[in-house]
Image (cartoon, rainbow, N blue to C red; front, top):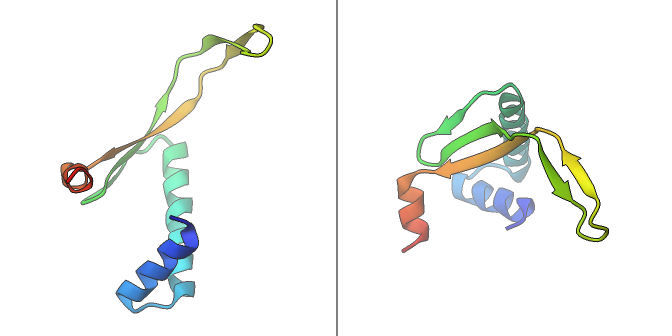
Length: 91
């Protein structure tokens, strides 16, 4: 689903203007990204938990040339859905 369709559905279901929903969604993404950058865990009841985990540095290979490439440590974003969402999707 594209962002535009998501905004339209939320606007229709909540009787809000698409412009208002788009602004709220944009701010939600900004706040979420900033919190993850700062190492916070974001838990949204009924949806799930967002968390940034630090990966260890490792050695990789360029598949085309076979050259060894060091991969530095970085933050990896993980999402853990609630049990309700898991069950709903798997019905």
